[in-house]
Image (cartoon, rainbow, N blue to C red; front, side):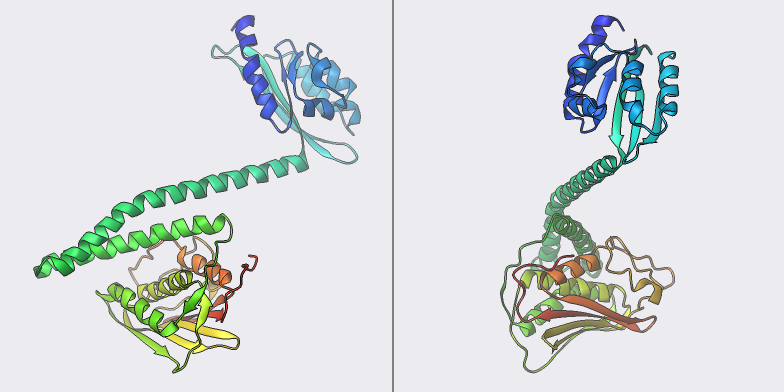
Length: 374
């Protein structure tokens, strides 16, 4: 690559320097500076990068940056070797009395292998950690946005499949036994996939910050009856009975009904999933300063060593039943826990392996205007 072609890269590299948060410079193949940003000049103790252009890198660093270091010899050794080589890449950590720096020099090669120069950076280690943290936060936000977009796009066809299944089962006349079994299997799997997508979407929303709490008066007995009716579809191929047990007189909650429904439906679904036969019971009772809503089952239970992890995202409780594989993403209980906090409450769990589990949602009578911090 000729001189004119290398010079054509200067505008591109100039844009890189303008957006590079670290102290950075471009050194030509002759070992002299071509471009540098303001942060690089300040790291060298200079007022401006204007006076660097055309000056030898070894001479400048020897007279400025190296003199601030407790042991300048490793950097000077590298610079002298690099000036005599076609290309080099090296990272060394240097420190003065107050701060540790990282020096990076990366050889830039053209398509034909010719040396174009070096990209150089000087980064205080504490600033590098902050830059890494910011980059990780940006990547996590991008991941959540992608998950939300993909989940949203997949929900539309699944909702249509579920709708057509309900139409076939309820409004299209009598189906043959085998046909009905096939449609019910399609419906069950589509509902399971939709729940997984909803969980992913909900976690992405919650990761973006607290959701608004829209309060209204909630009558618990009527809500419980609706939830059990919805969850009945999950028991079609199991010997499991859903039961509601409620105290005669319950207070009216002032809370976000949609979030409360989601928590309880998730808990009911989990209970049915880990129960092959027996009972899943939803118990409604007064608490010390609000209400207790408990979902109990006669299922496999949770191993004691896993109880402390079940509310973490992407954590799946191991299924102790022979030949059984746990389905799901491990997001349901994490979402339930976060939603409970938004409503001013918490979820506790008691479990005995082989005997079943009890998940109890403790809620205040009135949801707080502002959620508690995580």
